[in-house]
Image (cartoon, rainbow, N blue to C red; front, side):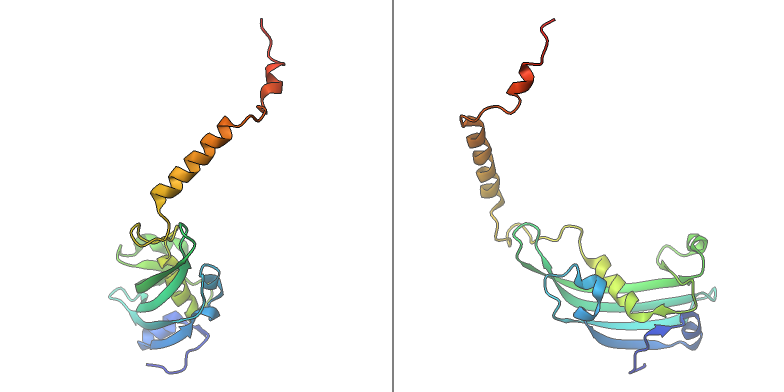
Length: 177
């Protein structure tokens, strides 16, 4: 296991060597992930192993653990999402190779000879974020039934006001043929 984490690695060479890396990275150092977080404090812990499978393909296995603080899209409060992601990747040179991989693994396309190790960690964390992060109904600060009732009441008030109808002018253009 390496204590020094290289910026870029050759996954094929590392797979032949059976290299492993583990470490901790601050979430604020992961730029793409930081954009999706409400708070960027915290760390992600990872462990990555390179190896060759029985077909001599370069493979990457590992784990990524973190607690991400997201913004609940219902109440806009902080939502803590624990992430415990498992990596099972196969290194490919061209997209067509992905068709021949086992269903249990995902392709990682490495056109050049190297890839950025922290990108693997960041990608797994980004993939763990739900499309619409929100608390469970019983935990969220917003009473959804009350909020919907308030909106309906506002809409009814808007309809009952003595405001002129914005489409009344169009009635004059209507022909009575």
